[in-house]
Image 1 (cartoon, helix red, strand yellow):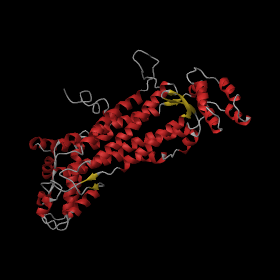
Image 2 (cartoon, one colour; image 1 turned 180 degrees about the horizontal axis):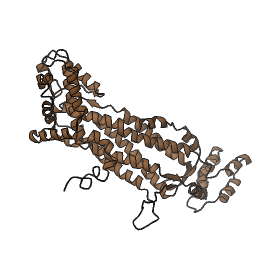
Image 3 (spheres, helix red, strand yellow; image 1 turned 90 degrees about the vertical axis):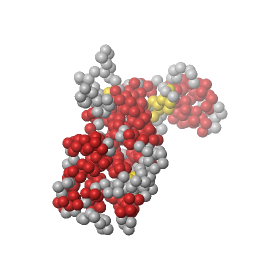
Image 4 (cartoon, one colour; image 1 turned 45 degrees about the vertical axis):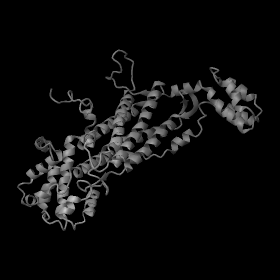
Length: 467
């Protein structure tokens, strides 16, 4: 069977291939090879410019341009050529070195310095920087923008629906009213914090040889300041330099990054399930497309499939992200290979996360508020006013306030406006206070919910700019 969208084992390369295309430049096998090529070239160029590294002279502008073009114009054909070499060597990074040697063989400047391709490097010097750049670039160019679109939509909805009363449900039962905007503001604020956390996780890198001590570097050039040179090389790539490693960069920062993604996904899972519930309660309707089908047998169905798809993909993503964050920082002695195959699933984890983000965002844009249903639920929930009545009674020093309201309302079936007003009239309170209590309804007993919704920091412009 030929490999195609229909025969792919992974749904990311099959059913969902078009929805995760934005991650392929960062996490495909081709992308990893391309990053390795770029770093090998940058290392060779850095060595050529370093005073005190005898054996490699500064390259001409023409040679620099030729080297840069190898990375900039790296094609799938080039990737296939690297894989053919790997088939002989059974070593992926060494295959990149040999491919580079072949490609620059006719350039006399590079030919004289060919031994400085991959000079003093262990494979992990190239790999850890490649993985770091893959994570850094995909975060800034794909993942944060996708999350930013969700936040922007939630902020917009929170502000627009700030004043719309809604019956809250604690433990699934009618509870103190809120507003629909305030409930969405809760999620927007949580995601704003999570966005900031994800954006600020540093990505570390190292360039210090076989066990992290610059052994080979110093054997060749003992008087050269390799630590400073390598720090500069790493930092010039936009990564934070890690001065203490074994053969591998220990992946602690990666674990922090994956935990940050998992935290975001957990908040979105919570949002998916709440919106699913509100749709079930008919607080939201969903915009329909004429040709779409909700059920193969029930023509009326408009299912909340976007939020269900988001929930499922975020769950898969978190299962992988949790494994990545727990496994990657653990390596036997100076290095074992168990991290290598696990690192290849980074794109799978983030691919499922991205599917979750896109599905959630798509679902949010389909929602239409059903104000009549919200009003109907509130009209049948006069029992929620037991809370403010007993609280006012407490504030006036009236004994057994809670217990009297409990006896009046708990487990008594439908509580009516008339029943509560009769109770209020029986209280030894000034008439003005009774009047205030009688004017209270489930619709207007929302506290500061509207104010809090309007106060939600927007940041919409910034999130959309990021997107």
